[in-house]
Image: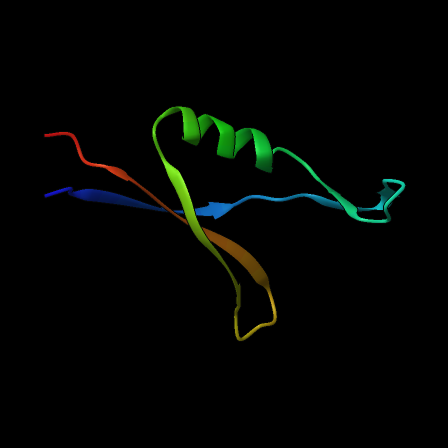
Length: 70
């Protein structure tokens, strides 16, 4: 039977509202690089969730999994 291990991480994004690409989306720095590093370590991104705290701050959490070594 396949066994999994899980990792939950805070995605640290820096959205610069003063710089936009031609497609008008904000620039999000380092997220792709961080996920690629985790992918090379065997982690697969399963889901992301935006969470709003009672004081209105928001952050994004990523849920990852990889097959557990025997």
